[in-house]
Image (cartoon, chains in turn red, purple, cyan, blue):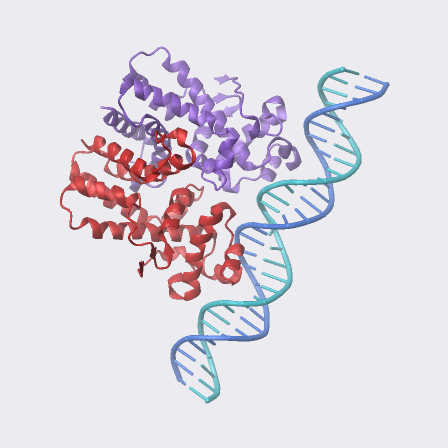
Length: 224
Length: 224
DNA sequence: TTATATATGATAGTAATACTATTATTAATA
DNA sequence: TATTAATAATAGTATTACTATCATATATAA
């Protein structure tokens, strides 16, 4: 099932809005494919241009650098996650159940919708796991942050932090726990797949289920 | 106080052992300075060569790429942490106290020794926080991992996992908790400094103490 | 319909990066 | 003193990360 969805993303992220043209959308969706295939380090605008049968110049008219493009993609993902979370959680009242479902959503454990806006969610999720920290683990983080390009991430964290506070209003670290759950979801899934000695998933299968169980234990014991 | 220390590091990390010559040691210690100053993305062998008044060719005789050099530096740090932990923990019997001290060591909350092997520990720690994940968050992680260059990290995690099991032999995720504590120590310190909305350190000072308190809460509630 | 603006394509060019290679010079060791 | 090995100096290459120019195609407005 394919779905159409649009988010108004920060204007600092692009020079021309990629949602405003076919080639713009094709830049983003093919960037997701290509980063997924070869990793962010090997990813270049030249290779992307070849993939979409266009030129570097055209891509540069949309994005000033591959870092901006990566951040654009991540912003889209964070907006998407919060959007999905809000819809799926609104019918639930029990805060414990809410947090549990939130963890499932973070872990991308749904599988109903596979493509949104012609973006492959599976590949997007894989990029988030492997590359998302590269958007902020840079020397220029403070200047980049001033452009508000991390607000969707902060907003998502804030949303999770509210669920946490519903469950335990006295918990002292709701935002840190929220960001930890997000980051740990990515780190542990990567470890489970590539550096299993850093996890207890000795079976080395069902990485997603393993990480979900671990996060569940971590979150609920912290909030007890 | 300056100290001399040597670790036998994985031979896949270098072409010529940098510990075997003055220029080799100078490559490593100046790489730490330079990566600290300009970040790993901006760091090049050419700039490093200028800093040590030598040439790119000389550096390439020691390290085949800047990734290998980064991993070498991280390996040294992980070995150092485990070494320090083993010495400082041996006199302690209470597992809770052990884990607490381990968290302090992870957080680099000591400050007695400032330079080891002419490496600035403060700068090294800052590099670990900002750049360490770049050593394994790459497409080639599985091939790199086969060369055993992450064993010091695994060994450190294993050491922490043993403390965790001493405290609670029934805990199901001792290794995942160990790697989570390590990674979260880095992530939360970075967030506290650069993306404070992702933490609850509203005072925005004493990042180290804040993160220590949070990790303490997280670890001990998980193991209760 | 024509005029105009705009997006894209095609091409070129530049400085920097990430290397590899060659040769001369220096220092260490046998 | 002869030999070996490390380093310096230099050059060169393919790729990267852009910037710039101009022609052409396309959409829109008068």
